[in-house]
Length: 270
Image 1 (cartoon, rainbow, N blue to C red):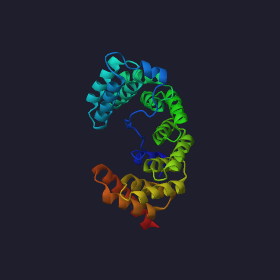
Image 2: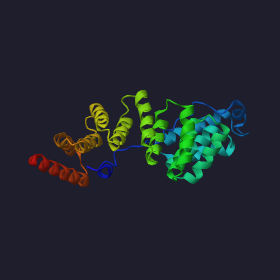
Image 3: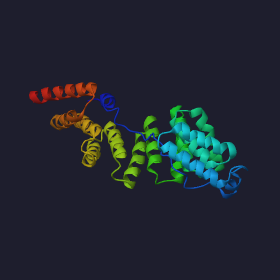
Image 4: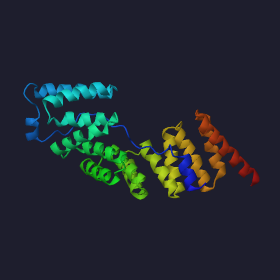
């Protein structure tokens, strides 16, 4: 199987972490900025409560209500970093990149140590194809929070998009060292390793994924692809059949059936 064919068949396997987890900031704005963050008419405690409610609304899926709550805080307290940061993330989730960017810019200006704001802004740059700026922001996020798996996963996806597969693998290696059971990192790393022709390493990662989650359809399917590319049709056939047992999508079932038929013919000729 050619590399192009593998990429086409396995294109759904690579998973970038695209959902931002909305959490209250763990590192606040500098003390001086915090003192100025709440305007007359809204106490610091009231602002914090509205931000807390906004985060709750966002986590429950009511993004519009979350934005309204953050709007209220920012209307009274334009320098409230937590409200700016979280509104920027919610707007990003809504696809309103034009409005999200200024919020994140301002949050970063007020608190240059806010790693999550750099990571969120990087997603905006990435979506616009500005990979150099995305990588600069992700470098900053990773430098500020080197153990954050989400930042490393996101940076690996940008490296992948730019064709820098070795750096993509390096970030995935770091994630796996932090959490050896991180299925997303293992699966993504396997996908890239296969493209680099490192089939045994890819197989090892995929088998780990399947050991952790025996019904992981994409891992089962991709393992069949890798064994086929490696030149082991009997093993490929085994994993294709396992994938077929779980596959519900008719188009992909048809594709798997075609692959299985082709492999069976190959084995019969041997």
